[in-house]
Structures are given as C-alpha cells and as structure tokens.
Image 1 (cartoon, rainbow, N blue to C red):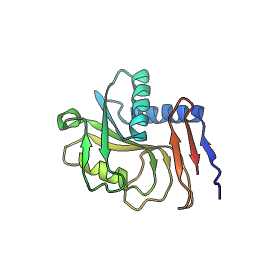
Image 2: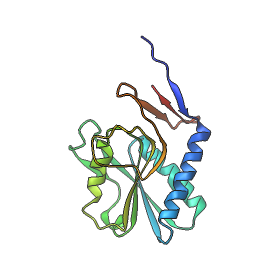
Image 3: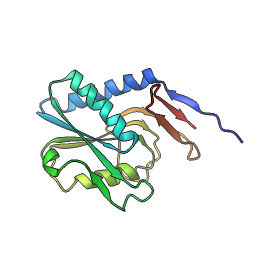
Image 4: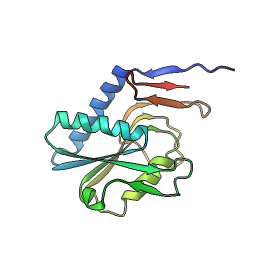
Length: 166
C-alpha cells in the first residue's frame, strides 16, 4: 500500500519559523555576550546553522555553533560534541533538533551538557510531535502536531526545504 505525504511546512513556512525562533532566542538571551547553538546531527545540525545564521543577521551577539553526534537508535552508546566545555561554560546554550518525537534523542544529548555550569539551557525544534516518553520539552518550536504513532515527520532541508507528515 502506497502512503501519501502531507505537506506540513513549505520552504517559506520553515524560513518564517526559523526567524521567529531566532527572535525568541534573542529575547530570552537579551543581555548575553554570546549564545551557543548546538544541533543534533544530521537535520538538527542543519537547523541549528540556519538559526545561527538568522541570529547573526538580527543581532551583534557572538554566536558559537556546535554539533552533537549520537546514535539515535541507542543514544546511551556515546555522545560526541565538536566543542570544548570551555566554549559553552557559563553561557546560554540552545540545543536544536528537527523533530521532537519521543524525546530520547534530545534528552540524551541534553544530558551531555549538564556536567558544565551554564547560564541557561534551552531546546529548539522545528516540529514537536507531542509523543514524549521522556521529561523534556521544546522551549522554542516551529509547530506542534498531534499525530498518530504510526505516522512520521520527515524534514528535508534541500534547495526547496519542506516538512511532511508521512
């Protein structure tokens, strides 16, 4: 049986959501000298770069970018971050992923940063599916969806970015 995809967000919609998320981040970090934006590979890292670019266009605040790499099937394996703790210590850190589904990926990535004192820790996602199994929430989100467990959301950040419900 062939499944049909429903467009949730078009490229233009995604760009508007990214700008709104960036503005919300700036509002929360109004007096910060720098903001650390860390994305979970692969799509979360792409989204984090787009948010960081928007932050740089909207503000003179220094933006530090990073990437988190972890096994999404078994997040207890290991977590790798391309930043040193001194890069984000006592700073506001925004952890970014494309879709928040069960919360496991975001939770295990967040756990990595909890050993270092931060000014504040926030999370940002493009799509929040409202199926969390872990006590983590998105502080900044592009869109919230109530979907069935059988459905999945696919985000494509290609030349014509889109988010679809499959």
